[in-house]
Image (cartoon, rainbow, N blue to C red; front, side, top):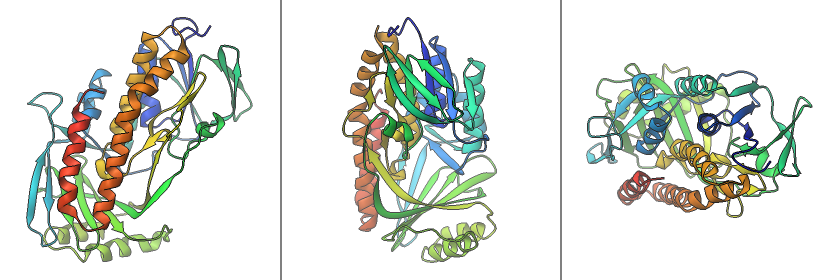
Length: 375
């Protein structure tokens, strides 16, 4: 019953990027997959994200890259601007889908999740909204999973893809800390300026800002607020406070600031990271994505790592007779790559806090070159 080629049944907790791509990859390999998602609806929080080259490469293996490029905004260049509003360099990211395809894509989170949901369900994945896991026990060669509606599943594999505050991680007896890095990150959905055909990053005297296109008509502004305590602001204060932060930037940020004034979609979140130093699994239960390794957003690689996790997990389970052996091989294959990305993102965050932007640029480029290597 513990054979990957025997009872190939799985429960995945979390219908985010990691959970949906893992479900799609496993279903494509012949697994019977059920997702438990605590959110009762499919409304996705967050405004947008960047699918870097490694993310697109992994999505291409699932047949989803072209759809994401068609509904997102393809680009290949990051433009850095210094504190005086002058160009500080352009970084061209590795094109992993070929020279004629964009190196990366900005995409709205609701659009990406619609694409991922559709593919998972087309492959037979059952998504149960409004459910999570409340208890996990070993049941011989299987995992006994109790859901929040009182029902029980006995499956060959349990996957915790439920984010940085993962409950599955705790249920499996795995522990890690969540580290705050003295930064609050802002996101605001705005109309895309015509000049924004790639990512723009603006260094400020205290903070940093940027713009990422999401489609022909939309983009999102990001601001990293440095040296602040974790706090929550009332909704009514978000737009005025974000505009105030952007006042200190010259050049094109003034246009971005005016766009923010009309935004009805602004969020502010702490920069948190996590890396599970010990085991990522217990028996046939494993955590993936941010539940195991959550980088700071400066590397824009959280989604890529999550998507890669799903593919690599399915690959390793296909190579091993025993589920536990496949899970162990997955962790061994992923640990160093994910650790390096998390550590690099933390180092970049530190350089930003110290206003050493010129030192951060090459570190960011090195991180993207690392991610360009095969997963």
